[in-house]
Image (tube, rainbow, N blue to C red; front, side, top):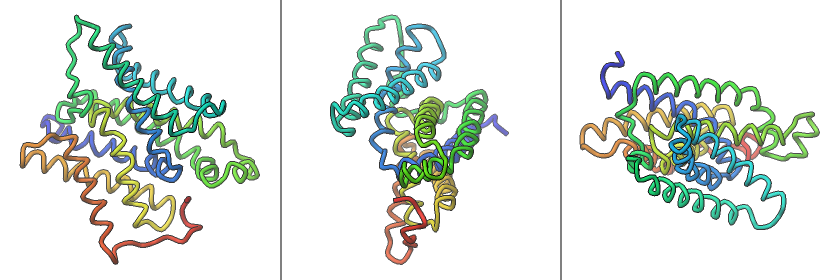
Length: 271
């Protein structure tokens, strides 16, 4: 079944979409789209680190993304600069440092276009195994922390009043983001992972009736975007990763059609 490259790409893309759906909802609810972009931009530095110390690129990406998220948390607490300014500085500094580091390794031959925009058509059965294993881990931890994350999205004080630990949930959420970026890098690339996190979730928010329904719908919309994007890529010979993102954008535009939106009550979904 997985001997065909298109089937492997479809299976991998759907697995990624199912994982990014609920996580993307939290990104949208918490207004952390720029945070996701910051971590994704740091992935290139993680690739450079992995090649420098001869480890698996996924491990390098996870290490750097987790370090950047912790650094951002510490800097936010210090109050040196506003959060959006800090994220802008870290995102572009990490991306530039990664490009410089990779360029400085004269012995290294890296497909930068593949890193930036992914190559889902080249995924192997082993890649799919890693993706589904990592995705299962992310979804399991997310289910365990869902109540804490949902409550702290509305208010940290509310979460603490309910006996929850919003700080632990926030750190775990950042680490889960790092895991997803690491496993998604080869499929949709560094620059497109944020779009796959945000666009299906933003579309689902316009249609869903509650948080859990929105999470499930975001996964379904992401999987639909993968199928449509890959089919379009195969038919018109367009890049696969960007085609998936464009398909997700097309679904978002369809959700803007008047009369197709179910506007949830204020209490049904986090702000």
